[in-house]
Image (cartoon, rainbow, N blue to C red; front, side, top):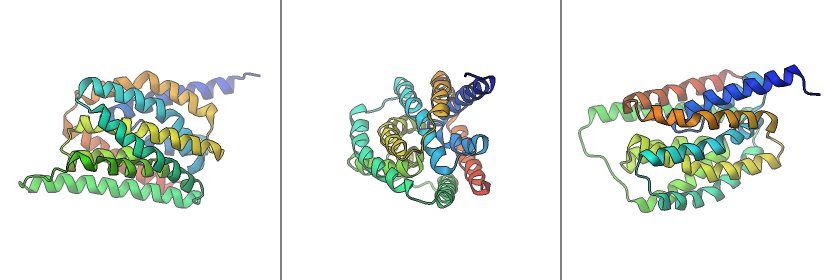
Length: 255
């Protein structure tokens, strides 16, 4: 019997999905990074279940986000799809590995990964301020390797791929911030689908929570993308870095 409690839970997930979709669209991460600790706090999910459930929302959000970023930026779709092909296999394999890792170890590894990435962002900003030397720009022939790395990180942490791709594309391939965020989103799609299949097979997906989150995100992700193109790049990078630190610390203190 459909109860008032069930309705309130669905409404909460829908509203949560709206907020996560907006943040994901603005920062180019699909909202999953913020969703994982929130699912642990609000619904008592362990790391495996939180990551698997977040993937239900991530998959449509990143696809819609990519289409919106592509409307505003020059993105080589053929190159992106090539990277996606490399990311898919590594994501599926990595998701199987993640399912066998102790939940507490996985949670600590996830938090450490975020804090290290935030430290790299801060070092990059500081070093760029001090150095006036020209940056190294790599050939696009190396991008399939980035696809493999992105897929592996997506499989392990569900959101790790996009987080790695953005700074690498900006630093080593001379992509603009919003262009890199758009490329990262399409690269996450196949990895997220492969990882979702693996997590679902392992029983680590709560569809009753994931589907309302996804619906809420579908409504708002385009708003986040629009805001991203209005904000100064420095603000976007600062928000991205602060978000990494906040989520990383939250994951470390969660038991």
